[in-house]
Length: 318
Image (cartoon, rainbow, N blue to C red; front, side):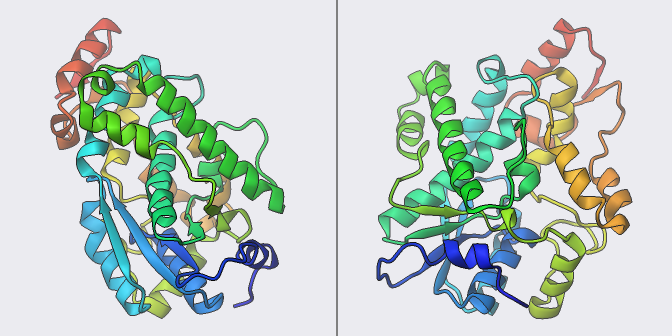
């Protein structure tokens, strides 16, 4: 496997001498595991793996631990489960403060908040680089013009992350939970930022994103398997439990899942995955808001969502 010149350039810009070259964000899914393999085995960087446990991907912990061990990499797990529970509650219960047309504020803010938590860890431990598995469908979501193949795009992506977090923080300050919950207020003030001394690298801006190729390499090298209850050939994306309820929130009008168009374009380059993608994006009954999932109870938002359905004259099932 050949090195990518752009990526190698980005990985060599920081001249500090440190014990650890970089921290790779790891969830146990295909993208982050592939990057951990790539960074350590192809680019030969001294790395640690960082998993930010937000309480909604905890089922993948043992997968992340297994692959980090196989690659002889230390796994750091940072637990912010309660803080992310408050975060999701706020983003839904007070969604009108965050809502923006053609924008999935829930996932976009969460992805960047996970990045910020890992980046703050890197800053505290003198690790110059954070490697994130965010791919083009996520990085281009909500953009009028897609990021191109240039070193400048990596800087644009980082600045965008900073902007998204700052905007979210400004809006968060007007929420009830921020004003009334000291612990959550401390979390927002500390974590909704990306330290300037850390270089964030988005490798999938420069690497070909071929899902089957990635899975085949992982199976061959690490005996990889999906962190969700799916066969390898069916697995497409995130093991985050929140993805199961996003279509229902979209039906109510709280979010718009703008990642779909970008992801479809990427996946349909690999025709074998086209059908599987559509299965993964199954919204259930299109005319009924389905409130069955236990996540609604975990976040204590079911009654609120029922009231929203009633106000908007939407059919729902619980």
